[in-house]
Image (cartoon, rainbow, N blue to C red):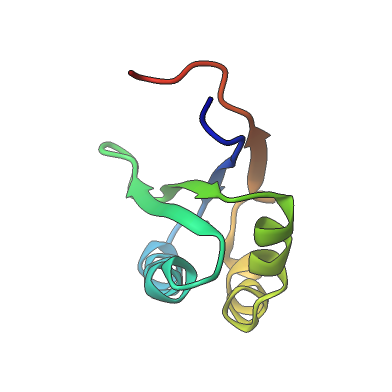
Length: 102
């Protein structure tokens, strides 16, 4: 049986006029996060029709790896810059896989 991992889906919406600044901050997270111990996958998306809407799809080895990610210097620094630029608080949801491909 495959090991149990933690999947995170995080959605953020930039305030009008701040889309490019938010995008820069989010894009800068990708490489350092992928290098974190326990990070199995870290993808950033932008909505096709709404450039203010961003989505992160992430997979971590376990809760401890995700907690370390949240406490990392690159995340804490980004949050200081980005939170005031968002239209609403980010929506961060945790999921566990129910099915596996063969």
